[in-house]
Image 1 (tube, rainbow, N blue to C red):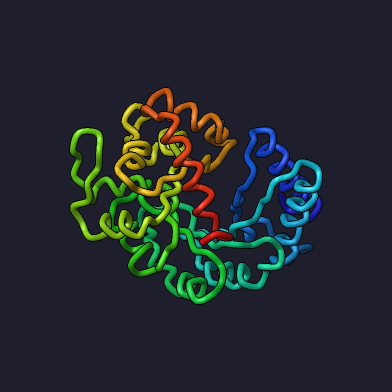
Image 2: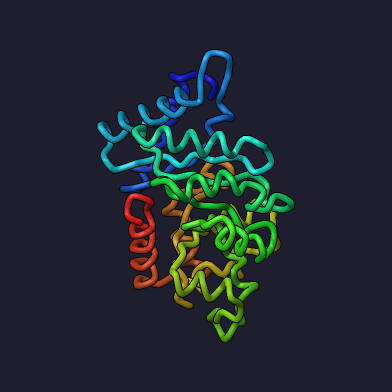
Length: 261
């Protein structure tokens, strides 16, 4: 994944795979600075990914955009943020902080996050999968995240009443009241080993039924060996997802696209 033509092909095939799974819209995230070599520039990497998406849309339909990831263990998130703003004409709609969560709180990257917040680029931050509730609070309060990647650990700021989660903390109140989207990835959460959550006790659908703006996502289709349709199937089989829940998840996803926020 270090040459223009390879990145273009991978991007194209990502559209093909998603359309084969009946996905109509997606925001595909990747870390462009991971793909640099002596013969490419960051902008060229983004252009390659964009070109693949455009060709994929021509052949398979749908609407697909890019989210650029800054890796939180590195010191170049500001460079990625600037790149995202520079490449909005190449299907870039968002910026993300990804990589290892624990010991790398979002506020380590305040400058990048604030630059994005002052732009037309959307801001999502991985938080609440492998650390604790404070990382979600940091992402929203200090970094102004519009969406939270994973975020299921918001349950730490709630009390459980039956099958529902009721906020009993300021940050859970904010997430619920402001309907901040939680980009939850069931299979990845379970398989990553980042926490002790299991497929049987994952709170994704309970949070949805509690009024939180939950969306279902794959995170990493290869590593988690999943597709979006598999995620919905698992939610139905293990987490009591019903037809009205499914419709709400799909609506939440559509409403939460950065092109719609």
